[in-house]
Amino acid sequence: MLKRFFAYYRPHRGLFLLDFSAAVVSGLLELGFPMAVKLFVDELLPRQDWTLVVLAALGLFVVYLANTGLMVIVTYWGHKLGINIETEMRRRAFDHLQKLSFGYFDNQKTGHLIGRLTKDLEEIGEVAHHGPEDLFIAVMTLIGAFALMFAVNVELALITVVVAPVAAWMTSRYGGRMTRNWRELYGRVGSFNARIEENVGGIRVVQAFANEDHERRLFERDNDGYRATKLEAYRIIAASASLSYLSMRFTQVVVMLAGAYFVIQGSLTHGGFIGFLLLLGAFFRPLEKINSVIETYPKGVAGFRRYLEFMDTRPDIVDRPGAIDPGHLRGDIAFENVSFGYAAGKPPVLSGIDLSIRAGETVAFVGPSGAGKTTLCSLLPRFYEVSGGRVTIDGVDVRDMTLASLRSRIGVVQQDVFLFAGTIRENVAYGRLDATEEEIREATRRARLSEMIERLPDGLDTVIGERGVKLSGGQKQRLAIARMFLKNPPILILDEATSALDAETERAIQQSLAELARGRTTLIIAHRLTTIRDADRIVVVDRAGVVEQGRHQDLVVGDGVYRRLHDAQFADAMR
Ligand code: ADP
Ligand code: MG
Image (cartoon, rainbow, N blue to C red; front, top):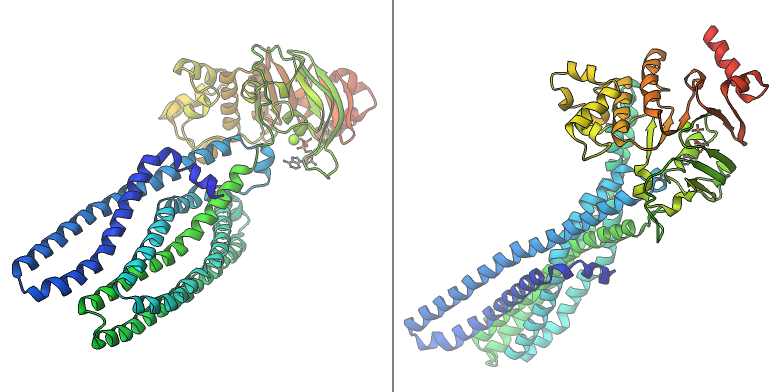
């Protein structure tokens, strides 16, 4: 893990070296101070020469001035190092997030993922700056102070040797517990982030059901859990901080007593006495530093573990080595003995599906909800990967095409259109980011959106709210269709695109969809049979797989599933 952590330093070697050496020099200067005082008291004072005293004071000030400069470097450039690393990690994490497969997101909570890209990385950045530097400086100062103590007075140094390690030990034994605790804490932050995220997203449902109290209770549980974990963290901090403080001060008192004895006895000078006490202070400071590192370090480690865990989840669906961009596609599609299940161990959703669709054909899928129509269609753009058999376009296995080229040639319009919180223009242009103004207008015209857009004061630049809340269902659907006109893929999947709309809006949109489908291989999943009468072929799917196929007029006079579905809907319509 450490190795992977340091890999992030490599690009910032220069910055790290600057920061690090500044911190080392600054640490050494701090160590020099007790020795300077010792010299001052023992050598300078007895001479009673003011010029020397003032010169010494000036010299000391110059040294402190230099140290101030070093501090600026450490604080500014050191943090810059941390921020650079944090930014780089966040960039990689976001890149990674873009690549993860549908299957991954099916099992994740948004809030948790957001936590990983924000809070976790912030903590890592903090440690990235302070961690290695603080530890190194702390160890260096400890050893330096120790050596100097021996130089000043061996007996006193030996006393310190006996007492101080107890302090160090007390401080360090809490480290492991802290790491575990911070990890848990992060999980909890993730949980309530997820809770808030979901609550805000579903606030309309919450209020419509008047379930605010229920939500409050759920939230309270996460919030209390967070409180308990955090309290535990502070309990540990309180115990370790106070114990180490006590042991440090105890050492100090013992050294003072022994030092006083040695001074009276004549084996220690006054300067040596003061110098030693100052050295003891310099010796404790890194211990305190280590204590604070113990507070921040586990946060960073916990964050970094979670970061690595995230970065190590491999996307299930990636480009195969040697995957190609197939260039122009006519749009012949074949499912060959395809089987698929969402999770290993669960019964498969699809098995032994054989189906071929000619370029330009419009094929409608009908069948009971849960039969696997959506699933079948999602295998084509490789949103999920077949477990057996293969899916081909123009005879090429979809797994042998690059994902980008494959998906750029398939358009999917679903029942719930996802719109981004920007303007109409941005949302339409999502179909092809480099589209010109003229192309965008043409797409909205063909989707029969232009009339509505003209009525809006801001026209194409009207902001449509989060997920497009300011649009009606029909308008959203038209926006999705405009997007598709712009994308202009040879293959189109319409998954219950109009199922959520009222019959009249549906009929109106049907025309746009028919125009969109022209010249493309189109897979329509439909719930209302009236919308698919004109399909070139109707495929009836149920849990057993493909059970019937043919044209409407042939199937409707038969005695199969389609006939029964049709009669049922027709009877409903008559009622
Ligand atoms: P249809 O579109 O015909 O109504 P689906 O293809 O959506 O049916 O679903 C087929 C089956 O797969 C259902 O039993 C459904 O519960 C299951 N399913 C659908 N999507 C997922 C998913 N993302 N993860 C796990 N199971 C799923
Ligand atoms: Mg479906």
